[in-house]
Length: 356
Image 1 (cartoon, one colour):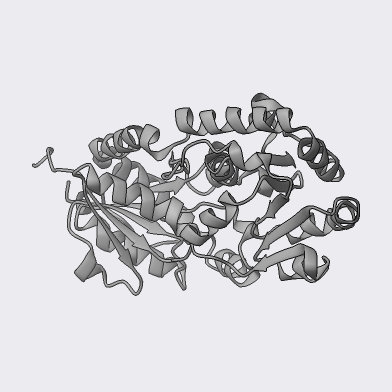
Image 2: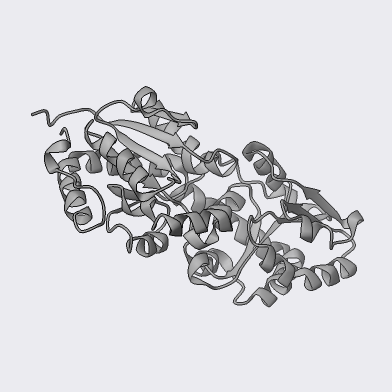
C-alpha cells in the first residue's frame, strides 16, 4: 500500500471570469511556481482526460443535474484514489435564481456529496457545514500590491469608486445622498462598474460608467480613484462574503468606506472607515474627502495591513500546508465520507473502493 504519494492538484474551473482571478488563477498558479504539481482546467471537462489518479480535485461550483450524477462523479474519483473538494465561495442564496433553484432541486448535492467543501471564510464555512462537516477555509488574498501612492490624494479632483457586484439594493439606498453630494461638490466624479441602474440615475457628466471589466482593467481603474464605497446591508448571506474588495482597495492606496455588515473590525482598526449604517456611508465619505490627513492615515494603515497579512505571498505557504495536511489524512477523510453518506438515499459506497 502506497502512503507516500506526492501531492497533485487538479482544479476544475467551472465558472471562468474576473472573479476567478483571485479565487482560482492567482493562488493555484502561484503554487505551481513553487513546484507543486498543479493544473487548472476550464470546462467542458472530461474526467478521463484531465484528472490523474491520486490527486486532490478542486471543482469550482459544480452543478450536477441530479444527486445520482454527483454521486457518480464522486465514485469515479474515489476509485482512482482522488479526493473531491467542492469549491464554493458564496452563500447559496446569493447566486442567480436558476442556480439556487437547481441546487435545492438536487438537494445541495455538490456541497453534500464530496469529501470537503473548499470555501473562503469562517462564516461561510459555518453555514455550509450543515451540508458537509468537513470544510477547508482558503481565504482570498491579493497577489499584486503596488507601492503606496499617497501623492494621488493631493489632487483637487476626487474620484469615488463604486464597483461592488450584486449590491444594487445597497447602491440604490445611497443614491439620493450621492446626488446631493454631487450637487455640493463640483470636483467629484463617481466611477461605477457593472451597475447600469445606478449609472443611469446619476448625472451623466459626473459619472464614469463601465461594464464588467477583466481583472487587470478593474485594478487599473481602481488605482485611479481616491475613495471607494462598500455599502453592505446586515444579513446572514452578506456576513458570508469575503473582504477581498477591501484588500484590493487597500493595495491600490484607496481609502475605503464600508459597512455596516462585514467590515466592522477591519475598518475600525485601520482608522474609522466603518459606517454603522447604510445612511452613514456618504456622510463618512464626505468627511474623508475633506480631511486629507485622516484620509492619508487610513490609506497608509490599510496598505500596510494588506502587505503584512493579506497578500498572496504571505499566505501561500499556509495554503500549501493546508493541502498537504489534507492529502496526508485522505484515507480517513474518505472513510468518514462513506459513513456520512451511508444513511442517504444513494447507492452504497464501500471504503475499499478508495485506492489509497
